Image (cartoon, rainbow, N blue to C red; front, top):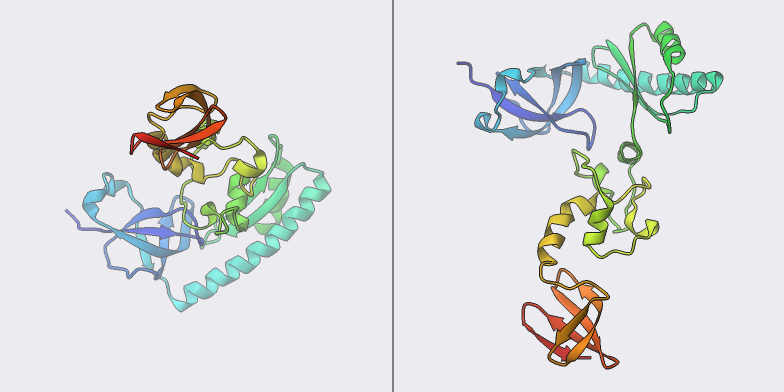
Length: 266
């Protein structure tokens, strides 16, 4: 049985990490040429994995080689040509009066495929667009419709937390986000508070949700009538993470802590 080294590789900054096997060792942060389903690609090794942590090693594609100076120069040329192709694609979209917005374009390393990502509210008949692009660039054209979250990842930006948005920083996979997650945190359902730069629900709601659900166990809901040692009253505020809530009793607020199991008047 052949021994393989397993590496995580991405093909663009903050992009999704793909796993490849290799018969040779590769240092982290070194660029490589990888054999992918779309053809040869220029990427960077970002992680090393134990072979035992991968169930389907035989199904993984292989790293072809550590990139050379010539490979890097070819990669830069591909980036430059893809930028020009994007400009050309946008002009054709305008000529054809298509309701779509070209976001970016990229060549595979071997230039066997030219990929365009675009935004559109509805399904687009882009057959004529693909035909004209193929006639110009003499390679296989792929037009891929992406969502608002993908666009935000491509463009980047600063979130309401003051940090770089998660999808452009460390998230390799964007999970679905539901309104119930915002409700689990007790957030006001105001779009300006719960939506990110993409106009969709904040991605961070997904990986915060489990902790909010755990912390909310045993806590009453705002508006609920509860009994305290100070008397019966209405819950007016809930601090989920600190597992505390405030109750209005005889026009005075009482703070109750589930952990301390007592309360104090404010």
